[in-house]
Image (cartoon, rainbow, N blue to C red; front, side, top):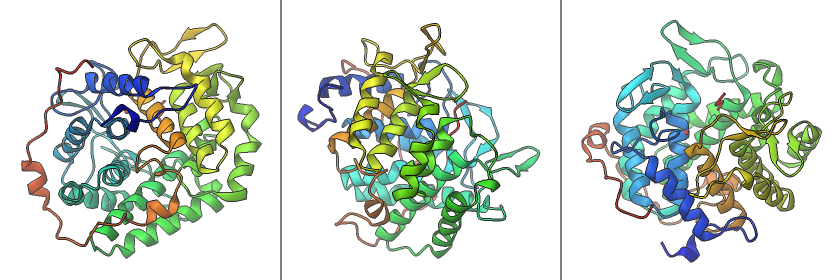
Length: 378
């Protein structure tokens, strides 16, 4: 991809810096295709997909395909994933429902970026199984989706951030289904019920109001838009936005985090508030290191980095925010353009999907190591 086609925001991040950040993510990618939080760290299925999306936006398509193939090869027969890996070992067998749904967002982002219809067909069985599993966890009284299944069964609690992300992911899955000529009325019904719960029934979700993600994710995921979204953002702006350094992860802690700041940038971009979005993307650049990686956050009361980790998914959020603000790649509006999320791009035609066995037998593309090169997270 020519450097001129890479996301950049004048005065904030250049194309060279975007590529450098993408390469810092690729450098952490394991030979299996998994993308851990940092070299030697653990991998979770959600942040792994976020990183794959950033690699796609930066033109590192072999690495992105390798990441998605890893997801297909590690999916369990019921459509779910364990929520934490370290190398080839499963560290946490429990299943986070939102972690499973996010694969649809990643694959739809890849297809919108590349028009690679063969890859969409190959990945479809994985997406179908993941969304079927996600909807099987929709057991709340208003359409909310429970967030966790472990050895003790399903935890009967729904999280607003996770449900908002799943609302978006199911929409991406429906776009892929439509493009492949596959009717999914049960998915449409489930998404409608979930959106109603998010917009109209806050009482059914666990109280996580301390967390900034519960503030902006209903907007980012698309369940709340228009005047209601603008009011929602304005009401708690002072609780979370900290001067010129970013936003708090938790309202009552002196801690700003880069990924949450960039996700708010994406939500503001979806509301056409480009001025505040650009300022916030610029504000969090103090977390950038010389190799293009980003520290997770800063405790601004004492000026210390915390945790002392440069996380791949923080860099990924920067790239996706830069792409949205710069309108660079064909997928730059995946969180903004609900019409684009709901409708496939021209050129996608009905087809016979691949089988799940064909995905699992597909060889994993190896990430190049010769180039000069993961919600609640907390």
